Image (cartoon, rainbow, N blue to C red):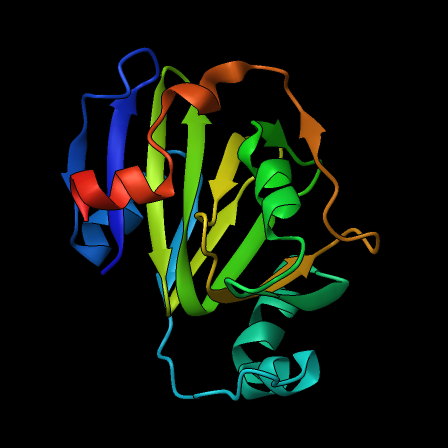
Length: 186
């Protein structure tokens, strides 16, 4: 189940939890973040290719490409046995921004986005079927957990793909990590 918790930036232990998808979408939209629930109609083999996964959602992907003029789409897939899972997790865990907006559709699994907006941190537990679009310049970080298990379609307007600009702010270290968050809120 998708879950949004809203925390004061300086009090990560305090939160308002929202579980209703429409209320989540409204709360995120106030921060300029698009949240949608897509129908998941496809099950994939563990070794499914990027092309197979994108093709299965081609109509929805094309709608976003046409609307926002994306230039590339890819699939990021991480499993607990991925040899670079620790390095990738560390890379995503530091607060950063992007020059373009970031779009992720969770084909399988789940992950935790932390959006640092004004004096709040909005923590969004995305699960299968969730689409999240984070505007350019919004400070955020992502935690996939110690045993990552997800597939996401990513859309980019920059042909170079994922390019992060790290803020150097240690705020991410003060918020609960993926496993602790699930224990506390999910």
